Length: 178
Image (cartoon, rainbow, N blue to C red):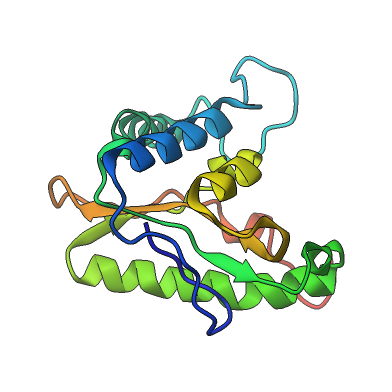
């Protein structure tokens, strides 16, 4: 496992995880995935702009199913983190924007660089439901380190990549006023 941090202070997460550690981390991620998972037959609001009945969602569900079955087998799980003086820094919108505004682009750049080198990555956040348990497992200091995502990294199976489905930007973009 490895990490990207907002600050230059090192974050001590094992780079060579044992199979048992990977299996436990994958179990935490799976538990988070299943906690509060949307029911496609529910009348509750969907957490996405995409219909669960769409062909795009079916494709995502297929990829997600593969990750559920194989996450414990990937060679690297990267957990980008933000080091803070205290977690209360995230209580304000400004604090969130300040912290997310540097670690998310850094992680995305890392993912693009990995892709350029023939490696596949995925941005996942399911484990954050159990962030404290993941911190305990990996020895991440919970009180001053906030996990951002869990990004598996491995060589891809095949090369048939397609653009990810995106909502029409016109449906949520606003110019000069809401």
